Length: 257
Image (cartoon, rainbow, N blue to C red; front, side, top):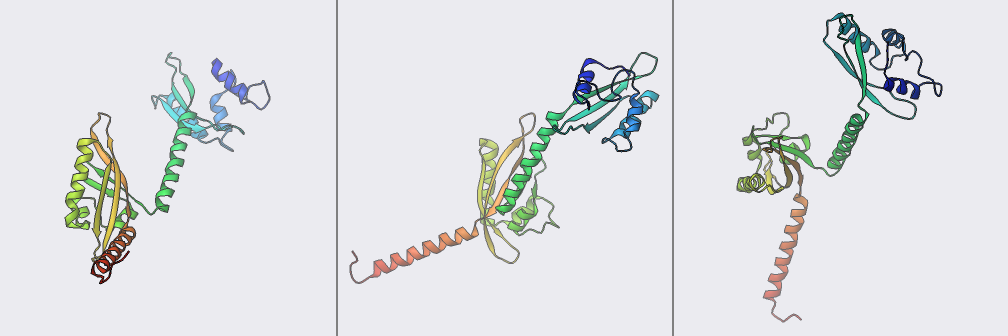
């Protein structure tokens, strides 16, 4: 094979001897042989690379590409290998290896952040939901279904199912909150009551934000819900206690100072 300067520098940087290129990586080496010899303890995808290059050389594929890791002891790296016909009428192929390390690191960061967010949501006993505006369909995770008293095994996401779980008096509260998000571009903020099949009432707080498509059109609202029944009960008990005290004070036969 013939190589360019970038390949030569990469080979030297990753050779086992300082200043010398990696074995079988220089001009004249048989690239397919390198792939075959890697198959005993294969770098990930080595045989797939060999088969893909052969397919390009034989004309059964117009091109071939494969992402693969190429880690050194101190650095994690990923590349995408692409093979295309040489195009000179005498066979051969052009093999390029392009670093996608930054892209992979960004993807890893997204996955790690999502895992941390999932853990925080589970720890706070929150449910996750989203509303597909165009389809008028709602997605609830299992925790959201539990908070609303909905069976996740039978839930399909149509509006009627959600509103059946909500106290009828609170339907308009939800519709007004959604309308404000769409017309005023504010965060979704709604408090309503969920009525379970056993008749018990549960106070729910919901927060969310609007997501738009590439053209700037409203696409969906995504957010979280959590149960605030306990705090509502405490507030109600406090109000009742204050009312009782006020009644006793007003009915007292003697002055209080």
